[in-house]
Length: 322
Image 1 (cartoon, rainbow, N blue to C red):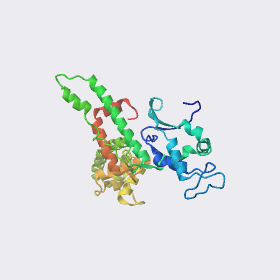
Image 2: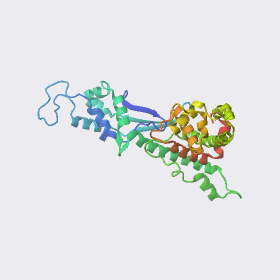
Image 3: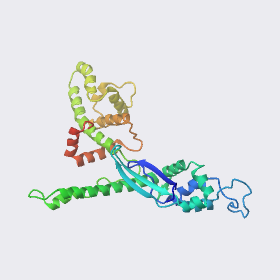
Image 4: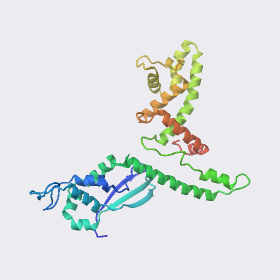
C-alpha cells in the first residue's frame, strides 16, 4: 500500500448500524459519484459528438459508471468487542485503488476533497435498497445471522463442559444445550419490538393484572363512602393516577369525567385495563405504537420469560436494574 493511500471507512456500532458489505457499485455508489460536476478536456455529453466547450466540464453518466467500477473494491472487515462500550464493532473498509488516484487525479480531488463524500455515502446507505429491501434492514438481517451462528459456537463450548450421568443422557444434553433456536426467535424485516422493552412489558403485565383484579373485587363490595375515601389511594399504589386516568380515557373516550370509580365499572375486563395501563407506561418510556402493537410486545416478552426461566429470576436478584 502506498504511504498516505486513502481509505473510506464508516464506523457504525451494534447490531442495527453497520456499513454495507455488499458491492453497491451497481446503484448507490454510482449515484453518489454521478452528482459531481467535473472532468477533463475532451469529455463529451451523452448524445453529442462534440466536446463540451466549457470549464469545468460535466461528468457524463458513462464517466460515473466507469468511476464506480474503478473505485470499488471488496471491503476489508475488522470485528472487535469493546468492553468499555459493551459493543460488538464491525468495521468495513473500502480501499480506493491506487491506480485511480494516480491516473485520475482531478476526479479524485473533486470526489474526495471538494465534495461531501461521507454524507453522500450515508444518504445512499440510509435510503438505498438491495434485493428489494432497505439496505440497513438487509444488513441487520445478515448480521443477526452472524450473531446466531456465533452463539451456536458458544453453545458447543458449553456442551463440552457438560457430562452425561445417571440423571441425564448425552442425547438429552444435546437437545438441551444444542437445540435449534433459529425458529424460536427468527429475525424479520420491518419494525421489531425492542426485546428489553418487551420483557419489561410482559413482567409488568403479569404482575399488574392480579392486583387490578383484587382491587376491583375488593372495592366493588364496599359502601360508597369507603370507595370515595380509599379508592384513589389504592389506585395510586398500582400506578400514578395520571397514568391510570389516561388508560381509562383510552377505554371510555371521556376526557373530563374520568374518576377512580371508572376502574370499578364491569364493562372493561381486567385484561383490557391492564393492557391500557401498560401501554400508557410504555408510551411514557418513548415507545411508538404506530408500527408495533402492545400485543406484539407482550407476545415476544412472554416468550423471553418462558425461555429465560430461572435464569431471569437469578439475574434479577443480582442485577439491581432488574
